[in-house]
Length: 374
Image (cartoon, rainbow, N blue to C red; front, side, top):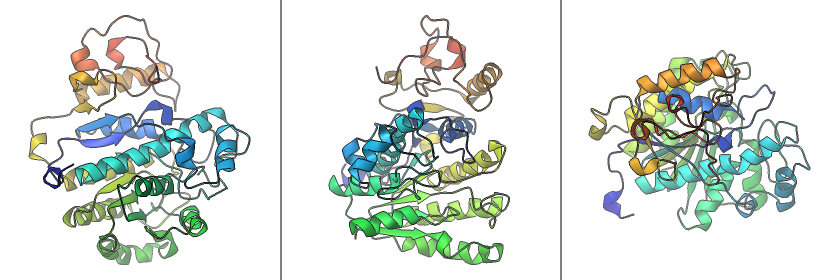
């Protein structure tokens, strides 16, 4: 992309998601099934988004950051994943979650501003060990891929999750990586009395990565005062943290690819409210006059079925969709229990929404669920 094309106003916020990123695990952590819930919640905000299916990373790409035998054992369900199971659906989701992070970073580099991967479960994953709900370290998979592809000479990892990114640091040390600027706030900040000091320092933390081509930002929800595994920032302080990250990065023209990271409050709605705030301040930090008049809409990204029409879906209809799906599916698996009746979409121009092979099309369409991988 030419320099003149960078930093142009964004008509939509790019979000990399497909249903293949989902897995269903009984666990303290909701991270395996949180991506779809987060995207659905964001769509209801009325912020124009481009939902773009990411390509899965290959075993070779995973093996840049991890021991190859470990990669094979995880994907073949011969060893335990970060949830301490050998579940096949978790293994199947992993190339897509790292793929979403990598796709978001590439997109942020192309647009010079921001992109989103609604993913979790990265920073505790070590070179040859899965741990603490993290199986593969998508942050380091992304950083190493960008370097090898010549897209970035330096990569920043700004980890503002509640917990220290020990897996990230271990991979950096094990592989002798010298082009990643890694900062994990948990090494220094853990107490409510430190909140104002931390917030005052956020701009300088971002500015310290000014020499990086892109920053991978972990916008963790678990530092919230009510989180069972967190406990030092209020809802407003978390939103201010995010605002300072995005505002400073934009002022310094540092591209940002951000993800969800941790969050363990129940019900999940409490965690989603925090992620909604992150999306709100992200949208505010990257304003565009071209969004005025769009209203509550979504634009499908390239590669989505029906995307040739660049379909827009009003949030009014999306809310109907959510209500219908919630009434026909079990808790925690919205979109998976919907029954299709076959046939063509009666209004594909308006309802051509695709959220993955299980989420299917907009509920009003009453059509089947084509396979994204077909």
